[in-house]
Length: 109
Length: 119
Image 1 (cartoon, each protein chain N blue to C red):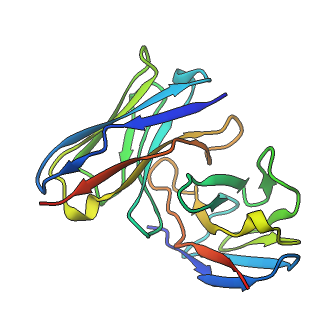
Image 2 (cartoon, one colour):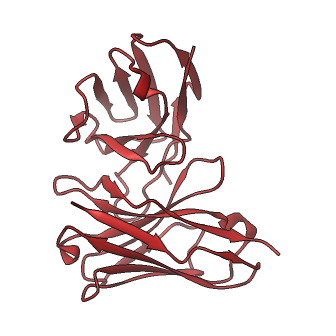
């Protein structure tokens, strides 16, 4: 089974900061990676799929990169509404197994 | 507008059974595979199960294989999750989710229904 790790698990940042979250896969997954944002009490929201493709309606300050085993989600200028938990998800094992990473909580400094 | 509305979550005793439902609208239901994803209180996301557009293929996480059954009724635009032999560790908010037109990533989610397994 493919395992995902995320770093950091917790991040404290200020509005306007550039933020980078890393997701690492236990084996190569090509570009079969998605990123989600989840706010408290809400369902997850798809931000990026295929490692770097921005989902429709998602602000351009979000970007994704990487392939193989290492991926990053970058928020170029953190906004108040971006404080949330971010999850990566591997889709390489489709249709059997859609592993999520453990999450990165982005909090206000 | 895509809408996914889950229902059926209750408090159930260990070893008990429960069926969750997800009512879908705003898209052609039988064009898409559908998923269940769960989230234990204060924890991360766990993919649970997937069913193909026609119900002909189903897939499960190891943690629920043999205990949970996913199904769908395309005539009713509905997705189901039959949960048997429930355990305390199955306590979670259960979301149904839909792939996007352009990706197998989960672009649409319901609000979730809470299942609590407790005596």
